[in-house]
Image (cartoon, rainbow, N blue to C red; front, side, top):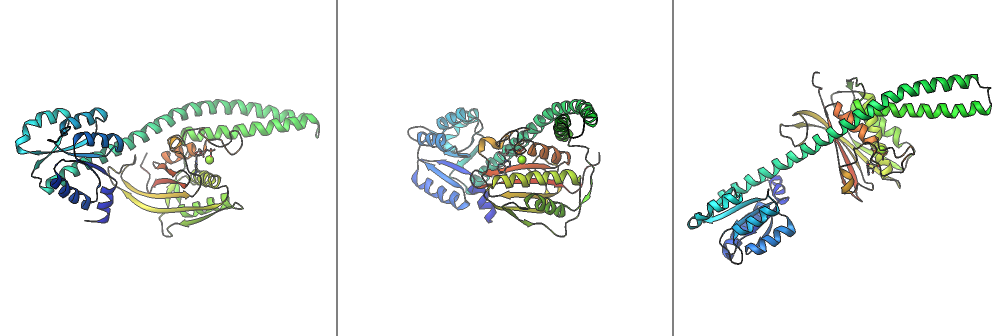
Length: 381
Ligand code: ADP
Ligand code: MG
């Protein structure tokens, strides 16, 4: 058995409920060798308590047991969690329970005396279902996030468009008035301030338009490693944060809008810098990867460049992780140049318009990794 196989099982908590000591010891040995993270109990009541406390991924249970039998335990577990994966072990003489078990929603049975290959196959089936459900949840979350961002983007884009037109008029008149004001006068000075603010507002409008439409992307073959290095150098110059990179030297060029991707690189670098105010190291790596169908990501199968920005900064609390791509979500001082809460929202929009994906994983107190997948070829539009 391979190490990766073991690792796959080690992440799975398996609750095993069996009253018969010798069977319990034997099966415990087999499943532990297989690599499962095993919790074993000797009757249905103990199993139910362990389920509620530990929320295992799979339950493997005998039926006939003292205190509470396996079917009653399963029925209660299913009330608690209708999607619980339960495998029942039944002796041939107990098959009268089968109808009851089917009604409870138990779909996997292993006949006693247990044939280990059958048992492992039943557990593999449960694992497969768990993985499918997990994949489906990821896809749904990504689709929901995209829909939400798209709706916000349309609203923001519409407003930005109208505002930009109005600001254009205001800017024009303010500039005209300033030209007519006496040079060096208080009026000229005040009009200068108004002009600057209007220009800042116009820049904001442009950013909101990028958020809405991902801008009008112009895809040209681009040397991504070079673009990444230029962004890191520019944003970290003179800061206490340094960077190390692991970028392939022989990478084919990627069809991207270089200016937009450069924006993304800048946003991520600035976020990492701000997450490590006392200094530290930002690690940036890129490597080609092949995503198969059913890859667990909301991505078409194909060849991608997987880029990772990994900082060792403050990290992101669990409750914020699903919100960091929302426009105007920020934990930084609002209003200043620092906290606009648009960096990741714009990055998300840009990457989605490149038919890629951006995701975050973080451990509060330890750091954050931002993963980007960019396709090596853009679909024909
Ligand atoms: P802003 O940086 O203006 O707040 P962003 O959209 O760039 O807006 O980021 C949104 C929020 O996500 C930040 O306020 C911060 O809470 C969190 N965040 C983003 N990147 C990181 C990071 N590398 N480390 C810790 N928190 C981060
Ligand atoms: Mg930011």
